[in-house]
Image 1: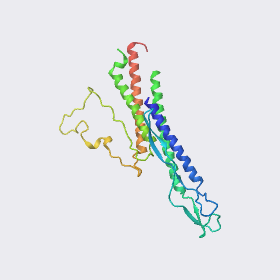
Image 2: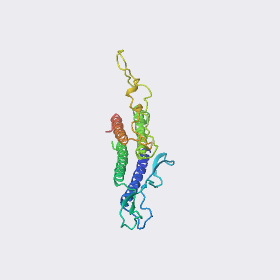
Image 3: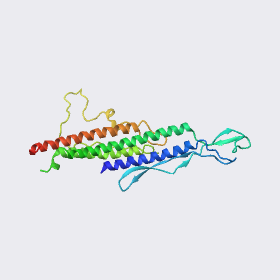
Image 4: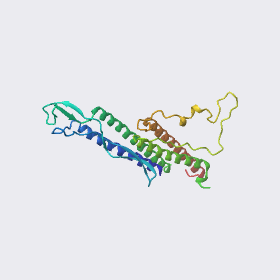
Length: 136
Length: 126
């Protein structure tokens, strides 16, 4: 039945968006994670990837979370000579996490999640309407 | 005569399965709203086989019937929003389509139900 397939597709979207929220919250939680010794790298921002795939059993194009890659952009730095991770010039490397970008990504994930929820409730309304024909 | 053989019921049934299929395609579009390179799809509306009422042009100055004008077919509209990753899904657009699909389905289901009531009246058991 196609309506159940549409619920499967939307549920895969829900799963992906919640996985994305997990990565975003990891990034936000580690926005200030420096190391404790000079020369070592601090936390590197993680980027979720998406890939579409075909569920051959049901014939539905679902989506799933691909490998979580790391952001290769340069680290932020701050002059703080007393810090345990400071190099000889007094610079401390900070994670390349920009909390503004993370917040925007979070909003986007939230909206996509809601859109998928909408699709599920719409499909469910259609199913229950079909069952109502029996009660006529 | 079985109920399945009546043209009205057949047409409504085809309509309802079209809405099912469309709901599936729209759900795929929404769930892939962030997949790079994904192009949204839609299902063409079913064409009426034959019969039924047709619009007629009685004056030369009338707007031509049959969608000859290229400007008023919404399915030919160009996509105006494609993200840098190549994803062409426009969530607002898809939400509108889902709502429309749902409404039309309710409409067809109600018609089906009413026609069943009609049959029951004809049988004489109400």
